[in-house]
Amino acid sequence: MVNRNIFAALVHYPVYNKKGDIVATSVTTLDVHDTARISKTYDLGGIYLVTPLEAHRQLIDRLFGHWVDGHGAEYNPTRKEAFHKLSVADSIEGAIAAIEKEIGKRPKVIATGAKSNRGSIDYDAGRRLVNDGDPYLILFGTGWGLTSEVMSKVDYILDPIDVGTGYNHLPVRAAFAIIFDRILGR
Amino acid sequence: MVNRNIFAALVHYPVYNKKGDIVATSVTTLDVHDTARISKTYDLGGIYLVTPLEAHRQLIDRLFGHWVDGHGAEYNPTRKEAFHKLSVADSIEGAIAAIEKEIGKRPKVIATGAKSNRGSIDYDAGRRLVNDGDPYLILFGTGWGLTSEVMSKVDYILDPIDVGTGYNHLPVRAAFAIIFDRILGR
Image 1 (cartoon, chains in turn yellow, orange):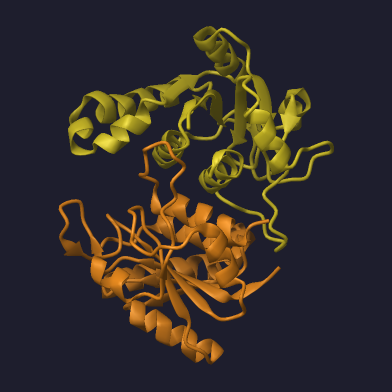
Image 2 (image 1 turned 120 degrees about the vertical axis):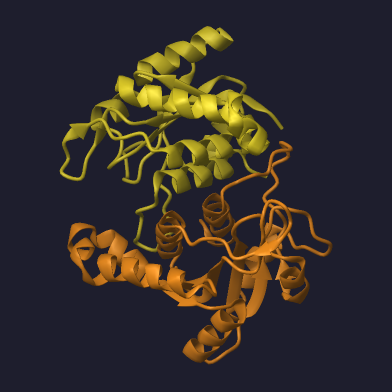
């Protein structure tokens, strides 16, 4: 199974903070490691870390250098493999443009989120969609989620992960794992 | 949906390290936070952090105090809710005994792991099993996984998460999310 036409973006801006302000969240090495390994497991075309903050893009570059070219590559080769899927973009639009440049076709964009959204599609529909041969970019918001402006511009929104327990406060890296398993697993 | 008869254990001993030695791994606050939130999302009966190291059990108690009774409870109430699912045990057998004491019946034990095991069951079988009304404890190994001695003693072993890409190096917290979604989600 290869999913080379399916890409993910971990979005650090624009997202909400706890108070509902629009902010740029911090890139965490943890999210980077986990989402890179999950992306490699499901053999995505790649994952984009989206942040407008130059210092954070430099942090990612340093991490990348360590695990791909540096001592880390020898110490932990499975991490090196995972990191080969990783790129940085300064905006969602920048990630879309980079994918279009790489594969020659503009990806359709699917947003994810913890809240209900009118017109969102379920996971069976999501699975059919991403297996139709077209390129897709799936957005994951950090912090308190993607802004409503982002939501209003995407091509599709996936249903929240709702298992009927009334509690829906998963870490973004857990949502990332579950969503790719639902649309690409098995 | 409630899954009050289904429990998880995040096992820090006995597990393998990279070289194949049997060790006690460190409890990380990150694993604690993520697995607590996932357990609450799928409404498990509870999650046990298994470690024989007294200092690590104390670390968990401090975390617990902060997020459940301290400043953290007010700052982040959804984390408080998640942490109410969390207990500590000094061994796998200790977790089993605690569950038996709590619900009056000894749970059957299901192990998980990244490698193939003879006689392992698939996720459809796992889903039927954990929904049969009996109590179950599902084990997740940290480090390089549960020891073969543990594997030889459990009642069932779940298939590895294998999506056919040849890469199977997920963080334990990602495996935890995916496995509970497969057997309890939707």
